[in-house]
Image (tube, rainbow, N blue to C red):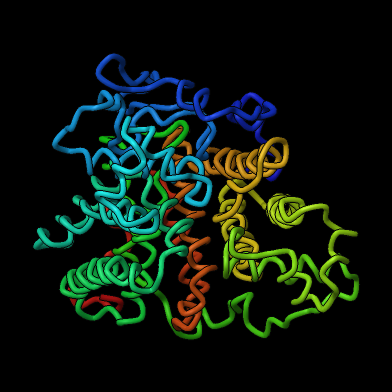
Length: 478
């Protein structure tokens, strides 16, 4: 394919949510919008055999509705009744509200209203909102915990984890965005569960591949967990059954990769090596430069304009000469990140020889951008929902345009993909890169940059190829 054949994504190929101006909706309108797949309706066919697609093309919390969201109280019990599963209903309602609007933007009274009880009734089950969030995360992790406990082989574990991920799509957002508000004591049992899952997967992987280096096993397992959390709870995506099959396939192929070491990869220098911190001279740039790390560390609710001004070395009131509010400063940071990603994408694609080369260049380009701007990526992931109105719409549409363009390139590179599976592959690729950018400890893994690029390319191969790269017993990379 010639470079000219790498066509831009047509407007009609971009999901509608990226083309229209999002309108603010109140909670009641949001709850009543969109199609829902349930007992009274059915998923819509794709026109392609063997694949069912559900959802609308808006896959961020707050835009559209999830047709098959994780279990939740679809019809709340009548007020005054005492259902036996009241605690579970409360947890499900809280999970949906926290996912949809963000933990800091949800009051206990709103959770109570969602299940038709008085707010005082919630405190019979939970001492406070943070304890409720802990219970939500515990519930979302339950099927993953069960998968790790029951599996006796790597294949069995991957199948169980894929099923859990396809049916619990909220866990990625809830864990990444909300868990940081919990205290160390509240986080301890949750992190222990994740550690046990990681350890179990590593043990089974190294039992199957005994010559695999410990650091390489750590990298592969960590990438597998990122793929599991990439499942969308919004938008056009495969049905849970099809998504389970897709996830299991890509997990199997990723864990079968043979990381390379030595002179063949040593020439590929990681972008974060010798990276120096530049301190801007202009006050506005200095404010933006210190804002991202503070927001990433403490969150939007835990960071004040005074904190940012003090870190930048200016008097508190001076910051209002540059930003009218904290939300304006957040928007400036997030729009910079979203626009920077798009500009970097266009730069990478302008050098591509063909569609396959474009996929590689996109992967390397975004990996470089994310790892050298990790604080911005962190804020983009965790605090976009703090914006409102046109500001939120602009950032979300920029992100959607980026995903849509990447999906279009992937479809040109590999015609075996269907649009819905290509979209899922792009989300998994972005999840791995975003998580890596926020996990600086993994940068110490030997030859991690070139091996991670190859892993990203494996994720972006059409499903059904089996375990590519899995060595025979006793092979050089086994």
